[in-house]
Amino acid sequence: MNRLIFLVKEAFVSLRRNILIVAGAILAVFISLTLAFGALVLNEILRVNTLAWQEGVHVIAFLWDEGQGGVAADGHEVLLDEVRTWDETKSAFYVSKSEAWIDYQEMFAGEDELLEIDPTILPASIRIELVDISLHESVKFRLKQETQVVRRVTSAADSIEQLQNLSDVLNVLGIGLAIVLGLAAVVLIANTIRMAVFARREEIGIMKLVGAGNWFVRVPFLLEGLFEGIVGALLAVVIVGLGHGFIVELLSTVADPESIQVPIDFLVRQSILVLLFGAVTGAVGSMLGMWGLLRD
Image (cartoon, rainbow, N blue to C red; front, side, top):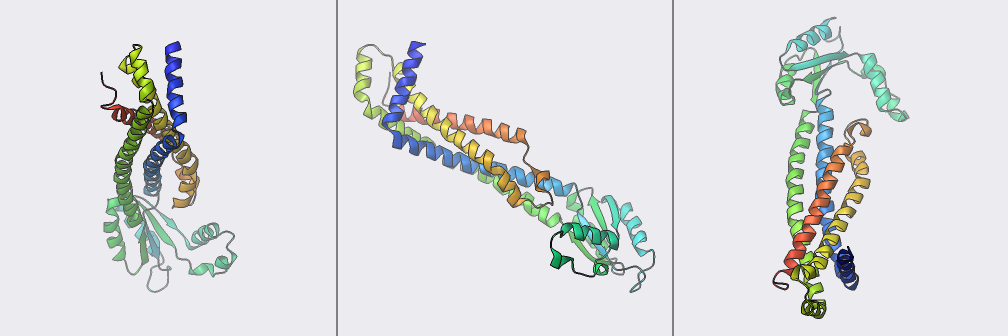
């Protein structure tokens, strides 16, 4: 126990002597892991957001008013029944003009200037959830053939596909940042340890003269590197953990941002991995810093 306490004290002596260089190494780990962890969290936000859309309405067909312009009195109901028989359709429901006005009022509550419209201009619609989001083009094409009943067709599928593409890019970006910036942090930690070894070379020589083994000499420097890596990673975890809610609110594309909160278990798992990555970065940097200087 006394030996362990001595080694820890030696590590902190080295940290205190090179405080600015140590701060630089911690900052490098912090920046690299914050960017990498942030990219992973942003990717998770997009994934959850995409799932929220995929579980809702994918295609909306806005309809001409019944009894006008050649639309039969039961034209909406006939089209709804037909849509429900399509293989691409998981479910479909009808939204009347009065229900559309209620939705409009809820959507723009508090925006008085937007509520000063004639409710009758809002069209009825058929809202469709697809079996597979990739089938949206086929359904849109079929609806557009019903020109006598269908006024306009819209779909969230294009936006969903854009989110999925962005999610793939962020996956690659997160991995790339972790590798490139992680290597930069390893190099900086290695240089920090190397400078610490040079600064204490006389002390190290004396320790060896009195019988200290190489690993006894190395452990304080290894602990120094671990400290730098873990502290940098811990700062990254705290910053991303506190700031992810703001990112959710900023990027939310659904009505209720709370519905796409990043799962806590995801944050916990990723935080543990970030801390482990920080520790490995510190350990590898320490070993590289001591390479060739403290040989058996």
